[in-house]
Length: 153
Image 1 (cartoon, rainbow, N blue to C red):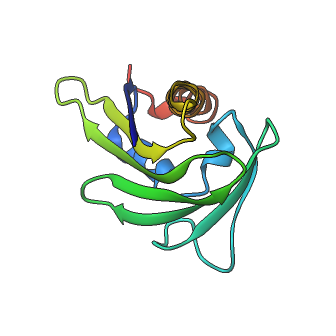
Image 2 (image 1 turned 30 degrees about the horizontal axis):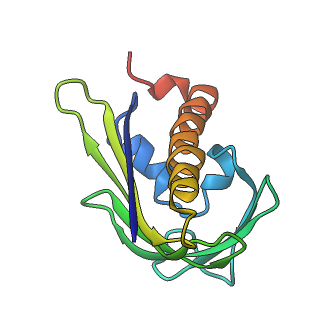
């Protein structure tokens, strides 16, 4: 099993970033790799157990399930149910914390998963850079374009 961990600081208060991320389907708005996304059935994007199915800009498709959502700890977990990428037993955790001396938000995104033998480096890079780092960068851009009044100075 591989473990990938990335973290960053975002220049908004924790409540602002959490209000976006706790909607499990919000990634279609801020993540540059997402082409389209929808929550299956009548579930909301913050209902534990909901399933999002989405298409990536590169043509791959995934279905992921929200496993837990904790508003007090600003933490959510999700897993890949199925998809066109060979990421097996994939479970990801996203957590936010306040940087106490600045009011910024510290965001950690991590996962464990298995891949086909010999492709570990390829998929660790894909997840770490193409998903997590691209997501951090996309969120910064989205916040700058949509909510500049709440950015920290």
